[in-house]
Length: 427
Image (cartoon, rainbow, N blue to C red):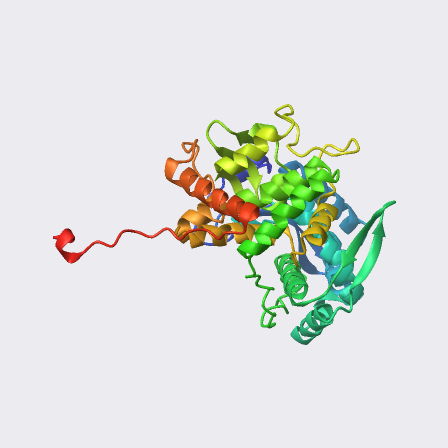
């Protein structure tokens, strides 16, 4: 029997069924090679006349050397008369939802929980996950045993979040606060996260069935409101008035960029000058929600960038006001703009949706609008794509111009119509 090393494990090949490789240097330490080719480290021992096995972890997240150290510790406990397999089973049976959530977050922080495109979850996503766990899941289910959860429990949990049972305002720091809300959207997204956590528990052998399966979630707050031309005009006048009254340039620039590009809020807040290419009329986002993404810039959006104080390539386009690297007053800035303009429900998503709707008014197709907004399927997937084509830049140019005209005059976009070709002309 060979010594188990990284080279040996990576050289194993599937043969249509599961098989084991045992270490000659550390008896009881082995590797299970699954029919799929995946490998996991384990320890096998005898206790009270019975053969027992304890899985250490899959190769990849766990290295051969780390597995060997864990195996020595487990076999040492066996020599002392302990039964690690029974202890592990007892611990899993008694695991609470709060303990499972902590384990899930620990695995996610190590890059072991996959998100979109089968990649580790991003730091921003984990920040939101931690908030939902802390504010909703732990208060309502934290003390429950994972193995005792049923579909009825999950349905009740969804209803409690939806009706605002966990709604609260929490002070954060000296001046900040976190407003925790309920509602259908929050409930749907939190139950979605809980389903992912319980799927993780299933892969870890803690439960055999995910109780979230079968739970009927409410519609996730589909938002279809858009700004009317007169509302664009109200917003435009309010921004000009706010500038005259001494509003910070970061606040007005943020709202103008959101309005004239259709970008997501974080895409503008996190934007670096190195990602702004005014010569090629595009934003080269290194890490958007959907990955690397190219976005076209219309002339009106470019004019906003050109008017801003230019920083170094690694500095933020919208820097912080009190020494912070990134502008952090966006929430209050949008609230002030809403109050000054009278536009109800003003927010980054509303501006993004309104930009896309204006493009649709001009007659552009869904695929063109999706490319302008950076929807999934329209991101940079090839190292050979370096710049956008003129057609897409023209679409962004005409859309930004229509939005700007609405902000200035209140006039809506003129629908682009294709010329009608008669039968005689076709022939």
